[in-house]
Amino acid sequence: MIFLRYLFKNLTRHKLRTTLTILGIATAILSFGLLRTIVNAWYAGVSSASTKRLITRNAISLAFFLPISYKDKIKQVDGVTKVTYANWFGGVYISEKNFFFNAGVDANTYLDLIPEFIISEEELINFKKDRKSAIVGKKLAQRFGWKLGDNVTLKGTIYPGNWDFVIKGIYKGRDKNTDETQFLFHFDYLNEFMKKKFPHRADLVGWFIVEIEKPEISAEVSLNIDKLFKNSLAETLTETEKAFQLGFVSMTEAIVSAIEVISYLVIFIILAITANTMVMSARERSKEYAVMLTLGFNIKKIGLFIFLEALIISFLGVMVGIFFTYPSAYYFGKIMEAYFPIFNVPPKIIYVDIILAVLVSLFASFFPILRIRKIKVYDALRWVG
Image 1 (cartoon, rainbow, N blue to C red):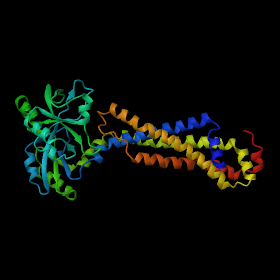
Image 2: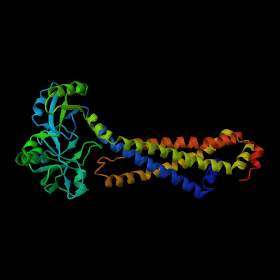
Image 3: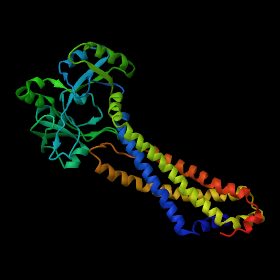
Image 4: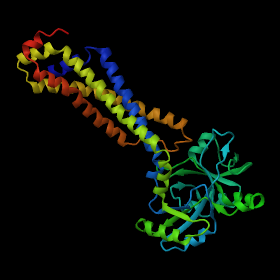
């Protein structure tokens, strides 16, 4: 009981310093949590990719198209169960700042291959009936206040003009990491326009989504698909959905690496803040520790005392940091929704923060304990500082 009272008294001896240390640790933990969440959001598409889906695109790049007729040929490859296609539209809503994923898809088959998009049967039927209809994600609908039956006009960038759509369905994600910010419409609506205005660009799609029987045959099926179109005018590159998503991430790999480095530097800052506080505290209490040694306290007990003090300060800072991480991530995610459609704080961050609190406490108490082990009692009693 006396031990705990003495511990509490030391914690409150310099209230301002203790408070600033806790706030410093909390700020560092908050920064670490947000930075790791950004990295996690960057890889969200990769982590949620299906192992039974392949993506077939033009071997040169996504900027080049593939004939829609490839669909029937791909479907005949052994191991393939379903095939659908999509085409990037690149439209914006009202102004360029309202950017989100929008694409023309095969309305009859696309959602069969994307089971993580949950939509009611009635809404799906209504979507398939009307060529000018669209399906939007729940988050996207909330962002712009859209509801079923609303008319929405997108301004084309790749495909010029104003394009009118009717919202006939709103899907929600099956999983926490499912993208709920997509805008999907009938490819036929786009294709009809291209046949009239730009016939040479008609019947061309951006990529095919291929479902296979089992993940183990993905490499074999990919090779067989690409062999079909070898030496053709539009050769293909088929890869797993995960590899396809990683291709996008690799374009910004330098940015992701920089963020990861900064997040680890934050850990160093936490260590420096706490260690500095405990070293200062130990120096000030040199006389007290000398008296404790003369009264029969051994180095282990004094070391435990220093460690517990560091642990309490670290845990308080970590708890405050965690408390503010979730609301901060929520508002940051709202602001950056166009770029990070999935922005959730990964649960493992909390465990990492708690482990950090223990490691920081061990590190911060190491130097004061080392000092006490080396200092002579008579030198400590003469200490002025």
